Amino acid sequence: MTTQQYQQASEHFLAQARRELADGDLPQASEKGWGATVRILEAVAERRGWEHSRHRHHLVTVSRLRSETGDGDIRRLFRAASDLHENFYENTMQAFEIAGSLDDVETLLDRLRPLLAQTQSRPRRRNE
Image 1: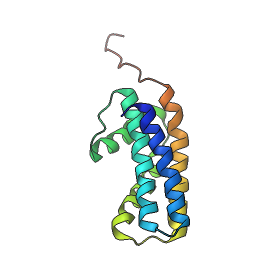
Image 2: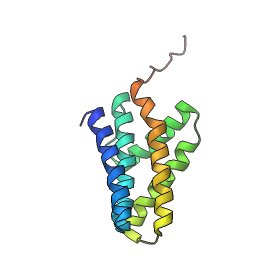
Image 3: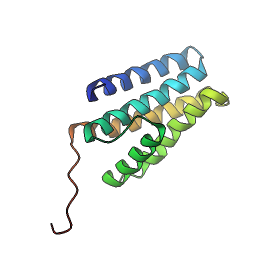
C-alpha cells in the first residue's frame, strides 16, 4: 500500500467504527478504531521508510514519533487504541468508553496527519 492508501484506510476505518458503535456492535467498533490507528501509523512509517508490518513495529513507531515530536500524548492516545483492540477479544468495554477511545483515536489521527507531509530528517553524523 502507498502512504495515501494507508491514510485513506485509516479514515475509512474510523468512520466505520463510528457506524458500528451507533449500530451497537461494540467489538467491531473497537476493532475498526484499532484499524484506524494502525493504518495511520503505517502511513507515517511508510513515509519515513520505517518497518511497519508487525505489531512490534507499531510500538516502535509510536516511540519514535513521541521522541521526534516531543508529544507525550502520542503514547497515551495509542494506548486508548490498544484498549480498543483488546476489547475486540474481551468485549468488556461499555459504549461510552468505546466512544471516548474513538475520540482519542481521532485526536491521534489529527496529530499524525501533518507528519505525513514531512520526511524523516537524516541522522546526524558525529562530526556534523
